[in-house]
Image (cartoon, rainbow, N blue to C red; front, side, top):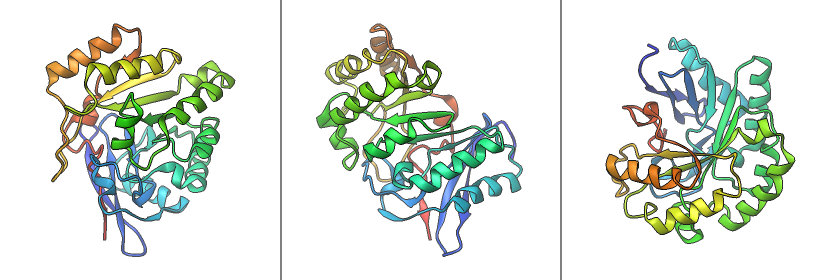
Length: 261
């Protein structure tokens, strides 16, 4: 694999199933934690077929080994592909711990469900935990993450748990916000998000935009609207980042990875 572009690849499993992973040209390997997903997010292809099963720790490492056989030299790994990592907590926690011994940083992306697992994972030795919220109000969150945690309960947990973490650890917690045109890009929705985040100034807000998903009606707003959203939130003092070019480039992966037979 060349270091200058993304490459999506298939990882066959011993039972005839397979998952996709992505090698980012930035040096990050994105792996999956489950075959399919139970969350039912309507904008994400990974859960269109529901959940088949969770992956073992060995199958998590199989994705890393497959990437290396293809010529990749991962500098870091993110468990952000197919599946909800907190629905497979034991295998993911073991993977994070074993990678620490290899001096390979591991981050993960989660909706925060179940909340009991989130509380434990906030304290693990990961390199970052990104919470995929995509909403400022509970109604929009329920529409976009229908089987995720209750949004108000999630924020209550964060307000309780984050002060107990070190400042360095708190800075490794972030919020993902996938901008969806006509859905979560209104001033009211963004103001509700800003009101929540102003109580957690160390959290980083990552604005994301859609990769194309066949058959999906969800799209991100055009670049001028994305810029306007960025300005709207930055003016409210939030620690905000624009979409990462690796995730928006071809084979970016986010929301497009599939479980296969």
